[in-house]
Amino acid sequence: MRATHQSRWFISTATACMTMFLAGPSLAAEDILTMKLEHTTNSHALTLPKVAITRVFDDTSSLTLEKSWYWQEGVHENGWPKHDEGFVNYSFPSQGLGEDNRWSLTPQLGAKFRSNVTRALAAIKLGYQGNGWNLSGRYRYEQETTHKTAKEGTAGRIDLYASYDINDEWMLLYNPHYHFKHEDDSPDFGTGDRDYLEQELLIFHKLDAKNTLFGGYIQRDKNSDQASMDPGQRNSSWLIGYQHRF
Image (cartoon, rainbow, N blue to C red; front, side, top):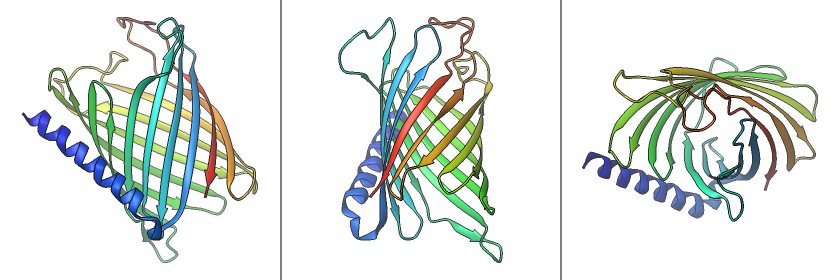
């Protein structure tokens, strides 16, 4: 019953976000289209196309809607890619801190939707704007409901974002993230452990004021040795992407 109530709440939230997204052009400062393509390095490699649209409002708040799919080698040999995940995230207006507002505090709310799992997300992000560089940290709380069993679990994620402007056209971003379980009785992660660490290194090339190319490498933790597919292997991935502002 509780799982059903949460599912309805998630659907209502997503619907409200979509309405806000479609009805709010007069409030928007700009829209950003982001397209990504990942390919993992494990034996049964995944190919994951992702598309996201972000509306950035004049008060610095933003709303993101993302959809991802996948093919897996040895499983999906042809045809349209399979549904993987829907994602919605709202970032509240950033609160400037300090005399020069170099510090900022940004609350976030969101949800992820898969065929077998729904996750509710709440986060807080603290950032510092330097001269040609940025450093920020984010804690995200995740509540997960498995549809078949209605079993619930909670997890946390801590991100560090460090970016450096090489020049006006090139930028580097390093993003390590640490994942951990909040309670003792929920199932382990796919790694077979209660926590794991992943790292992302991306480089961005600004073509002009509206168009940016990016790419990089995501180092993921290993699968559990008892995993049904590719046990003990890393699902690390190479990534390329394109971003357009309009």
